[in-house]
Length: 491
Image (cartoon, rainbow, N blue to C red; front, side):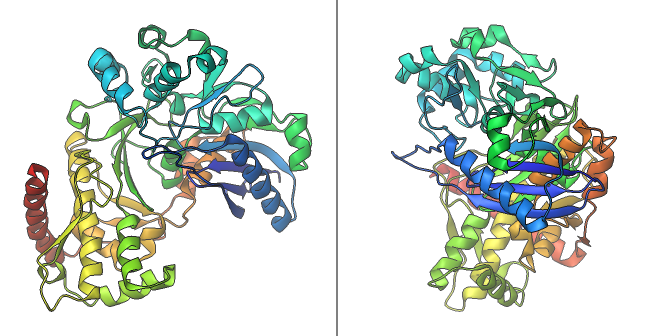
């Protein structure tokens, strides 16, 4: 059987995954690359370093598995990053990724001049997390580079260009531009023109499970593979993550806890109740959208607290702290943590919010502090869940949870009790890579149907139900949390 090779460009590393035709995973390898911050608020990555890391990761996967019978290559990548290339495909600037905030002024201006049109087209406000402000910043700061540009691409699109020689994007990444009509599945060229962008910069838009081209000789030689292997379009990492977590029907909701935490819920379209509180994006499934809640202090808060207790931080240290925190009763003996160490994400998006502890006493120890941090993050996530439930009444039955944070023993139980819903633990932590592989398999006919393969490969490994008594206790503490958040917002 031929293998699927998926390459997932994350924010700090590329992950290579080999999958069999039956959906089983043969090998997963990650290779890191750096992000630079030449000025406060700026973040940059060098696209060539993605290529070097992708080659190393793919080579390591094939070496460890002892197999090179690749039948298709598929891609995933971090959203909204801007890669501006000339006609020969050379990047004119380093990639400006989602986390970069240099285009704050351009975001504000686009909101004032085109906010209504952008909202109508995308369901979103004009914020730095999308690509249009970044492109406008380049046009205004480096007009000579803008004039030389042949296309703008998203991160995984640049990798696909290097694999195939074709400039293109897909509908899920295009949806992060602020001028892509997700309903019509096409560029809103009049809106792009009104923003000041040339029509010839817009790449072709493909379906995520469409074949974009074939592996060309230069990269085939570097990978040690034959020319001509089909390369699928692939999708943005959150869209492939939706497939990998089994979030494919309206109301399906998945939570991923890493350094930050994201809560994704499938929806049929935009909803004004979520405007400015969550963002809306095209799903990899045709005619489907998802709402995305972004929380900047997920695992970040845990890492911060654990680093205060230990000179060196490790997963084992977090597990030890989790085990001691499990002995503390729900509510952490009255200690409350506001998890805004990096500002407030969904549903407030207030960069001025800051973290704090309340209710401390001389009897408060490390276990209570650690449990309070877990609970505070969970309360913040519950805010987004409540918003998503309002947009999908009665549709959210359970929450699928993945990412490193879910491995801290007591946290899934806290989440189930705070949410008042069952928490389904996913069997693997490579949701985006898995989703990309699914798209590649469908593209070449290995898998007949995206929904069917998503359901098959995302079956929960364990379900953690809520406990009525603990859930009721957390409702009381959640009400107190909301009052503290309102107070902090007035400062």
